[in-house]
Amino acid sequence: MAFTGKYEFEGDENYDDFVKKIALPSDKIEMGRNCKIVTEVVQNGNDFTWTQHFPGGHSTTNTFTIGKEADMETMGGKKFKATVKMEDGKIVADFPNYHHTAEICGGKLVEISTTSGVVYKRTSKRIA
Image (cartoon, rainbow, N blue to C red; front, side, top):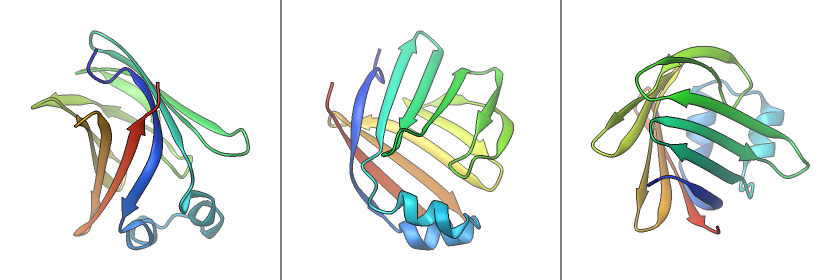
């Protein structure tokens, strides 16, 4: 269970450029800036439950199986369908307007989202 764990936001790069490119509403941009998001991942084989807990009690949960289409939700709250893949130990998904990867690197959760040449990187440390 390489991904199973609880991770707390540690730092990010290119947040403002990225959220502007994907046209995130300004209230969501402010909510997410330097936000101590806690990401909780439960992996059971190819089945995942991926929950992001935001300060103030709001949470977003995506449940998916590697290689099968699933109902998902973006950081802006839009619903869509995606087939999540596993490539070289990374979780890979195409969101409506960005490409997203997640991997465990040195015990940390490293997520990279790319759109129109802008690369957003978020690193979270394992807390459980």
